[in-house]
Image (cartoon, rainbow, N blue to C red; front, side, top):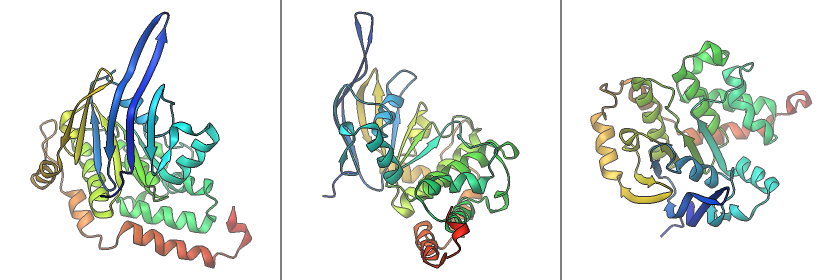
Length: 284
């Protein structure tokens, strides 16, 4: 059996308030396989966001092991965690976290800057990613000129442009209306199941968690149930799962069916351009 891309073992996060101990996480144990859409669902204060932050190396555990992409991230120092995230992880945020003075194209290309990718190559790769999420007409728009759904698509393109092993999504549809929510979730499902991308999403909404192949229910810092939801998630996607009384628009499905080229094949093709970039002004 293939080794899990994420393995969490006996994980604790304990805060001290005066003489009292508060268990944000209390003996959490689970794994996530490669190419799996895993949803962690719980109410506010359940520990789901703390768990996500620990898997991403943003917050240290009090006790336990976190093995991501074969590396024990609980043993890394801050410099090591920064390098780890750059190499292996993409993020999709509820609040988008786009830089307001940059265009959509520049926002998507930003992670490639930190990897030292030449300017001409990173802009071309970012353009392709925006096209694949349906925003090729918005490359010169700044965040303030786009809707919430469009901004989140920019966020998805930015998370994927470096081809990370794992994408962590923290309430990615929290600021979106129900129709746009389903549009974004359908896009994430497409990326997971057609491209073999691993996505871990936290949400407070059981209806949204129903999109996941695996659903991890968490309450008061403990996992109460791990649900194999692959079959039901596929049925929901085919039927058009209802959220908030509205059905998903067909726009995402129609757009993605028209795309015959793999996202990752496109990125590999663009990488070949790097060898042809000779202008020194394009290297920064």
